[in-house]
Length: 138
Image 1 (cartoon, rainbow, N blue to C red):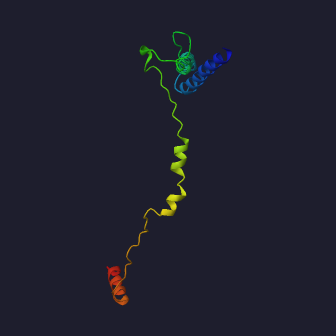
Image 2 (cartoon, rainbow, N blue to C red; image 1 turned 90 degrees about the vertical axis):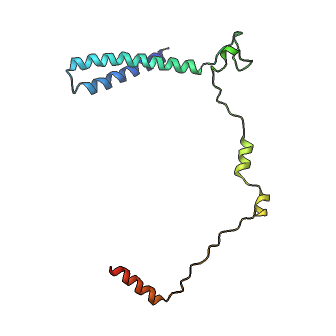
Image 3 (cartoon, rainbow, N blue to C red; image 1 turned 90 degrees about the horizontal axis):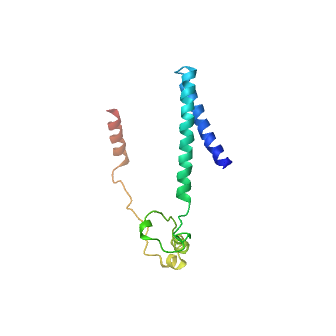
């Protein structure tokens, strides 16, 4: 309990300091102090509410018999209230996708590398040089 209260007080103190530092430049120090006290209270309450929501979301829901809902069937009125984020184990399938089998490498799979045609100029190099000189003069 003391750890939680310390967390709320630190959150309030952070809000107090930030508000005081940002408002003292534009206001009287007493006005800044009053606004910082209000910010302390607001940040304290927000930290309390945030911690309460996290605890509510992370706590396992109890059934009518006191057992966790994971062990038995879920009543219809509570369906859709919890989200189960576990995924099935697919480690072997993923490893098979990552590592190709040696049989597939030996077959070749009909892969043929690209062999583009070579560009060959049939013009005389002197004519090409004249054309380049003509274009660079303009």
